[in-house]
Length: 171
Image 1 (cartoon, rainbow, N blue to C red):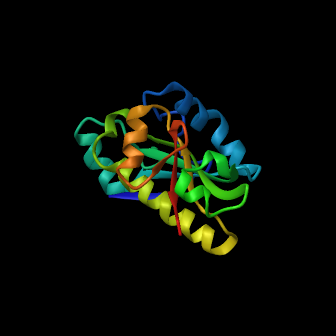
Image 2 (cartoon, rainbow, N blue to C red):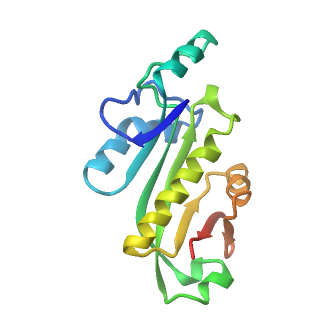
């Protein structure tokens, strides 16, 4: 079983490796600082104790505070000309959005559905935030074409002339 919770100093950030060095470095060196300063919020997937033991028996090096995956959210503005055409017509020049800044899964835990779980949680949190403070949707800069295809499978729309910028309307 997996639990999703806000990143804290007790989580083992140094034991995380997703295979993408900039994401690993960001989690280890920047995520907590950005969170402490109010710039973003990072949420981590951690094993529930009993599950961590089962994964250790299968050869995974996991502890109860091991990070299996993470994502970060921040408030942002995008310009209407950067939005998908259909959505851009509905809004003024600057559009408040929630930015999905990063999403990564441990290398040895990839392709098991954890990315879908983290994305679903991010969308749910973004929707709740939008109901309280206003946000047109979730905006993401995909790292590559494979990541863009992942987001498109869950309803994200490619933005104008930017194949790696995607938007998920919340309304």
